[in-house]
Length: 168
Image (tube, rainbow, N blue to C red):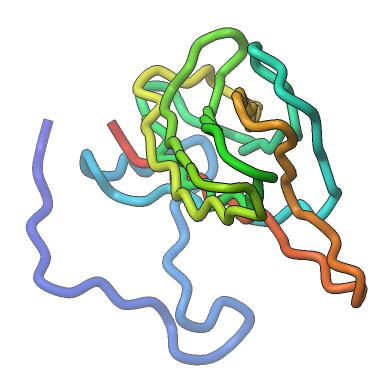
C-alpha cells in the first residue's frame, strides 16, 4: 500500500464539477475519527400533555438516515417544556427502550406555572447502520406537564433537535 501526501487538494474552478473533488465510483472516502459526517435537525411543535403519570410518556420521535458503520451520533434536544404547580419533570432521550440521556426540572411553591428549560445532550455510541430513530419521553410528578404549550395568543413554542453523526 502506498501513501499520497498532499498539502492542498483542489477541484476545477469552472464547469459542471466546479469546486468539487470526486471520489471515483466503487471507491470510498474514509474520514478521520471525530469528523462530522452529517447533521439531521428539525423541530416539533405539536402540543403534548399529561397529568402526574409516574411512568415514561412518549412525546415524539426524530431520526437520522444513512448512518455509517462504526460512527456515533451526538444528540441534542431542547424541550419547550412547562409544568403546572410544583413537582418534577424528567425529559429523556431513548433509543428503543434504552435511555441515552436525561435532564430534570423541579419546581416548588404555592402553585402557578413553571417553565422547564432543560437541554439534553447525549451520545449514541453504537447506532445501527442505516436509519436510527430516537424518542423524547417525559416522566412527571407535577400535576400537569406540557411540551410545546400553545398560549392563548396562538404562539406555539417548538422543541428542537439536532443529531450529528461523527466518524468512528
